[in-house]
Image (cartoon, rainbow, N blue to C red; front, side, top):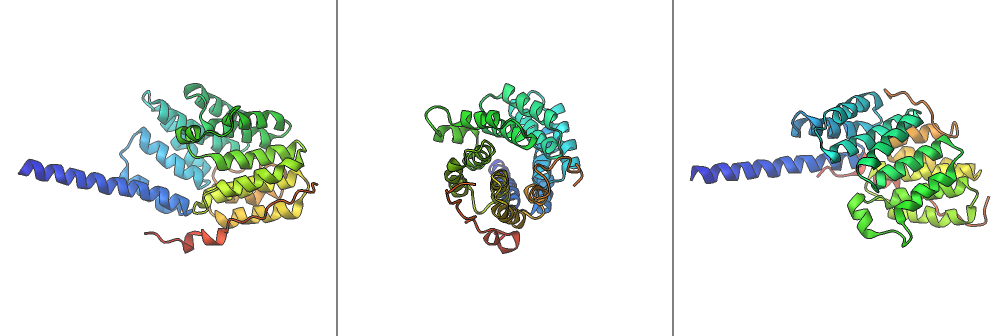
Length: 284
């Protein structure tokens, strides 16, 4: 009888801990990073997994100095776990990319791809580094198209590597714009908006920021400004909101502090940031 009671108690505790862990993702999607950090700290034991999870949330929050420290710790103490190492490398690549260290970012994404080839985040990371650095949009587009392969976007590939079709289309729009292939941009913009989760503040902001860069590359300043503004509104205290704030000031935001024309009609920014702001989302 006692054994059954202990077993039921352990099962109940497991359910509670799982629910708390899932709720951290929920709060990240709302852009409520401080709450997500408290939940991660509460529900994870010390070690590589804890360092990575904290680093992941800190990266999304744009708290680069703290994120870098946690992610390097996760990489140094991965204990042979390929998945943990790759996830930490990809996040670290994003941190150093955002702070203008493009060569180091490329090394992170290459190292991640060497360990687990064909992962979407590694390829999109490499593409974004090239687009931000400038001068190699053709190579960036190759990385983006490699995700799809000759037969087009594969549902299985997205299932294995994460649902990154919004990244694919938004980065493709940016690369096409940089290459002067303006007639192809509208379709990519529409697809990026369609595939973005409207309930995730960081995802909405990432899409809008990249689409703003595409408009900027085509010299369409008013539309670029609109997209950047929507990105800031969607994720005002997070990584992508900060990047959008800098995007209108220079071609690429380089060196952010680690502690802090075509006849095709471009679709309007139809994802409503006001509908997904953290103040308007239930915490249930």
